[in-house]
Length: 140
Image (cartoon, rainbow, N blue to C red; front, side, top):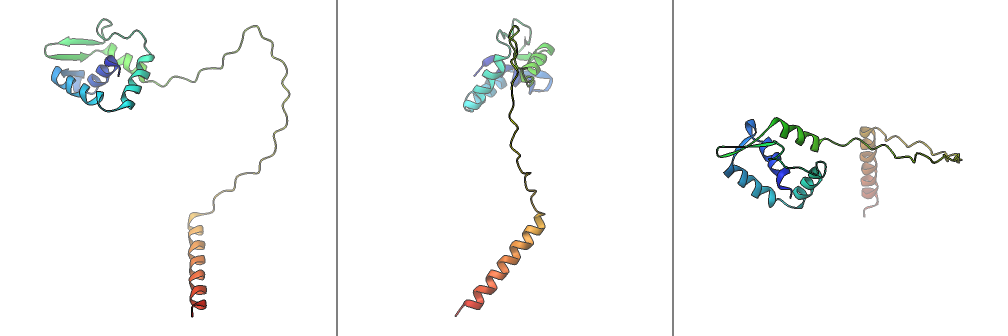
């Protein structure tokens, strides 16, 4: 679990971004014991900002009895949580592209569209009804 990311996530969840130390410790203990998913998530978020130091970079202020997230801390947290844009495929700069011959793709028949749900339900009921009637007719 990444301590600094966890602190930012906890503080942003409090009104005005301020939490007293007792609350911070309690929330940290809950998250630390919540399982592997939280630890993996915080590591993934921390990887987006490798040199993260919430105190020296001014993302969290120490106030009497607790900590408060700053505007800069909120912005960094938003950056970490933002989904990265799909990376563009890298192409070598000095490589000539050879012409690529493409074979014609085989024709795939279009997918069947599912029948109307109510119609399928009626047909199933009808088949069941007919099966019951046959079973009664064949019963000794």
